[in-house]
Image (cartoon, rainbow, N blue to C red; front, side):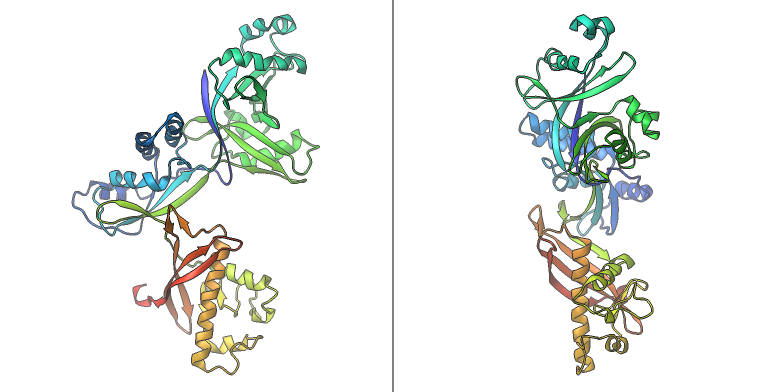
Length: 445
């Protein structure tokens, strides 16, 4: 008997990336003298998830906890029961024993988010099973009429006599003739196995119909469900209506082949695939005694970040188009001063006064005008944070979430600054509060 665990999730596919800095990490691990290292990045490996599983098993209080602990290794991901923030410090202690106070590492890891279906039992009917049904089913060694499928719940009662409430099972059978395999998905309510509505179990013919997945009857990182299921569902359900949903049970090969449930919904024209999992990263620091999670987000504004501000100005009816550059309105605005082409904020007074349709700088001295411009730069950074992190929250694991941002300012020459904000409240958009004002760090760059 095979058993599987499946989940439904939101967001993208989980992959554990190869580590391009293996030699660097090996040197750190093999160094016996404690020392400090900053700016490292590390992606968890399958062996790290195995270690995390062992740590979690020691904390498990019941059978359910033990199952969740085992999923860490089985699916190379953390979950809501056992947090990455709690168990990654132990992994880092093992992987980097020489690193001490002041060290920090950004760790890439996988996180499952969504509904858990629990332990999935799997069965495929064989000749003896059809014979035991008797009658036409025994004669044909298959189901030939849809009404005959009503026999399957009784079969599952016999097949899985120890089933518990809310157990799930996928069952494969021959229908409508001996040459065709079909599948169904059932849930046990404590007394009976009932068909899970709007679910579909993919079989070999389905994978074959999708092309590349048919080579091994599974999806993989080279043949992702999101690239195949929308077209497949359009063909299979041509009369689907807006709001329709389907739960697709399929095989996904990562380290091994596992069964997943992928929720799909139809908006009237396109099927959306809510594929399992989320790839995440977080920073961890060493305080001299141990590693700990630090939710601080540290980054340097890139061209795309400045473009978020330009796009905001372009689409904001309260900001006149006169703040957009005459020659490059697609990449340059002068309300906040963002320029995505040069990846900087422009503070030269000549152009800022020239592009000032709201006359915010009129009658201001140069000194006061610069104060006004800098105030808008800081407002622009908040706009960028709201666009870049729309799901920002004030705290994670009880720790405030701060954002330390490095950005470039041009006033005839380039200057680099660092500024720090924290998320004050979640919402649409979230709000951010200044923690540390802009500091010139040009000499450090």
